[in-house]
Length: 392
Ligand SMILES: Cc1ncc(COP(=O)(O)O)c(C=O)c1O
Image 1: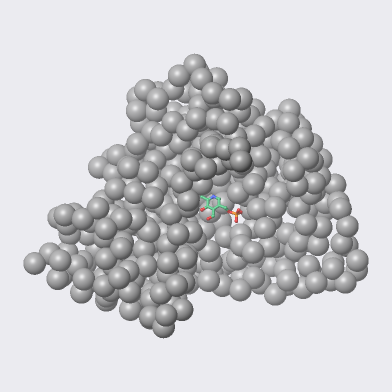
Image 2 (image 1 turned 180 degrees about the vertical axis):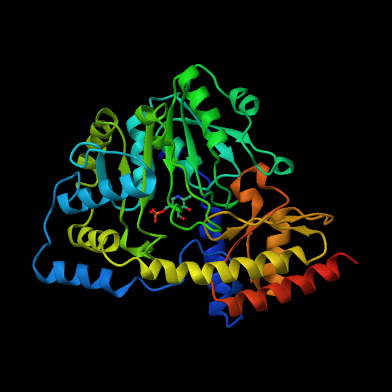
């Protein structure tokens, strides 16, 4: 038979999904695994959101809807983007509701790229950016950020990777895996380079509601010099504990959005009708559930950062946003993959190796604190024991 797609065949399987699968197998064998692998809130979807979807279902809202999205949700997203992100957007022309933000990013790439176009990815980076760029027939160009400089953006480092084929850069703030957030100065660097070299920005802001100590997400599209060339993607998964609902959106100029709409119309048609009613309830309804989740995340963050920094050879920066820590492990002659494997097999603690996020992440592990404080305490005790043994 003929060769099946090499483009797909050559994609690396998702390392985070592989870890989740391995953890599940070990758990099913009865092993008491503490998992720091999860990329999703461990809270239930707030009930008023679920109720809105159920009511919508019962009312028979079960057919195709507009490819752009239901108008109530488009309005709610536009007013949210204005008040929370400082982006003023025309709801009927400049937003598409999507089945999660992942596909919003993918469709944005499909809308922007021609074969051979390059996209800058700032490492350490979320595991799906690289494969999505390849699937959209682009070439990922990885820019390694330096942990010694706290993974901060530097103009000369980024510019060294720009070529005439550079079509776009993907930004992700708050960042998965580092928890860092881009400062205004860093966005000014992007603004300068994007205008000088004429490339687009895809800004993945999925963690923008999960920030600490008053840190505020600055959306690239809130800068007038970046707005025309920026696609902002976001969704409901993290802020409202709605990972399984698959609801997100992309916002940008009418020209870019109408391009992406062509992809949505042919590939997805529309995001699920009654799930969009849940989205309206999430944005327009009470925000206390999110605040309650933040109270828990704050406690967990404080505990896990302190516990890791107390371990021999470990340095753990305090994340400004999201629910991950990205500690560095010094003095071990193990790669991050070996360290993660041994922690799982010997101490029954599941973590994600930093190398899963690009070579710039080597020497680190990513730990999600979207799990109970009790689990964090047990997991930290196990890691402490493991490292005390290893460092002697
Ligand atoms: C950085 C980043 N972007 C996007 C997503 C996808 O979110 P969604 O559930 O909206 O597709 C995730 C999920 O883990 C993520 O970590």
